Every structure is written in structure tokens, then in C-alpha cells.
Amino acid sequence: MKLIVGLGNPGRRYAGNRHNVGFICLSHFARNHAMKFDRKLGRARTGQGEVAHHKVILARPQTHMNQSGQSVALLVNRFAVTLDNLLVIHDDLDLAPGKFRISYGVGSGGHKGIDSIISYLNCQDFIRLRVGIGHPRTANNDTTEAAIIDYVLGDFTPDEKKIMAGVIPVVSEAILCLITQGLSAAMNKYN
Image: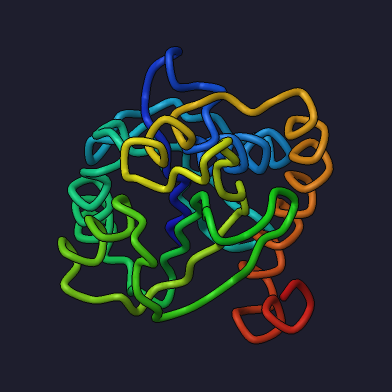
């Protein structure tokens, strides 16, 4: 059983935010594999099905980003998912828009949703697919926490939307590769 979690914030207000790129990527993957988020389990909207003969659970936590660990821990326990079968998709400020990286067993890099997951699981040994959103560009290079929050909770610009439209299908391919070929193959192909 594979558990694939896309991170974001629930509600229409946040739908187009940079911070919701995990939701956006997972929704695209779900559509490609005729899966729907039609159940509420573990404080998440979930969909279950089979992808290339592998049982998968897709989840979009409804706890808000900074409490994502609550939902992920509930789902991991409910479905007895081993952490090497957990994939978390989320935004990354340190990667430019249009870039993504697959990693395993690394720290949060300051991402509050990942901090929460690591805290609730008491472990960082799970797969992450980090999708770049870039750093905020401000006139005075403001990198305060408030500026970062405004940026990640801001919607993608028209130019960023074009970039993301090109990368989201590739992220879906990388998810499929992770499911069917495993971590090493996916990292070799997509990193």
C-alpha cells in the first residue's frame, strides 16, 4: 500500500496559492488515473485505487499546512503504511519555479508542514517530492517570516502559472515512476 500525500491548505481561498502546489500536483495525478477524493478519512480528503497494479491512497490533509502531521500520522496508522511507502508532495522555496527534486530521509528545510509530519511520525525517513516555487522577490530583499508567509500564501502569477502548467505533468510522471520503479530509479531519472 502506497500513501501519497499532497500538502496544502483547504478551502477556495487558498486554492491557487503557491503553498498549495502539493494539492495541485496530486489532483492532476488523480485525474490522470481516474481517482477521486471522495472520502473523508484521517482528517483528509482521500481517494483509493490501483495504479499500475499497486494499491494507492491519495490524500489531501484538511488540517491546514502547519498541522499536516496530524492527518498523515492518522493515515499511516490506519492503513499500516510503512514509511518507505509514504510520499509527500510539497512546495519548496529553495527551488526555482518549474524545478522539482525527489529526496528521502532529509530534514524539513524550514517547511512547517514537513516539520509537523516529522514531529508526528517521530521520523524523517519518508520520500518527499519538492516542487519549486522560488523565493519572494521584493524591492528591499525582505526575507522576514511575514514576507515569506505573504509569498507562499499568494497566488501564482500568470508567468508562474505557465511554468507550473509545464512541470505538473512531469511531476505526475515522477509519482508514477516512484510507484512502479522505486526511489532509486525515480531519483536517477528526475533529479
